[in-house]
Image (tube, rainbow, N blue to C red; front, top):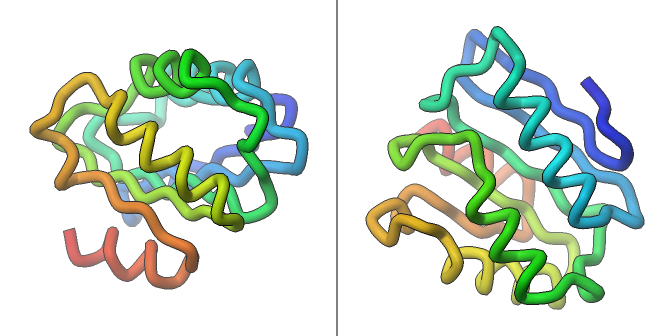
Length: 126
């Protein structure tokens, strides 16, 4: 399903949600895709997440944007979540996103990557 500049696909065989983003991704796009995922009847909060930001640059995002996205996740603290950054600035902002995660115990379940294949391997090992 597509919501503005973000699309997601639920892979029930791997118990994983894959989100891909387009250039120009805005905070409202992330909030919208989070809502769409949470409302999808095929979604389970314990599914893993692969969030591919390789085509996006979050340099214009503020700390408030990151805090809101971190607090709006439909995923449980038990789900493994991998984020793939395509630029140094996005990677750095994703590190801030980790700091804003509401449950510090889930930090070991969140991985930051620069390569989609590495992120998938990490998720498969969880």
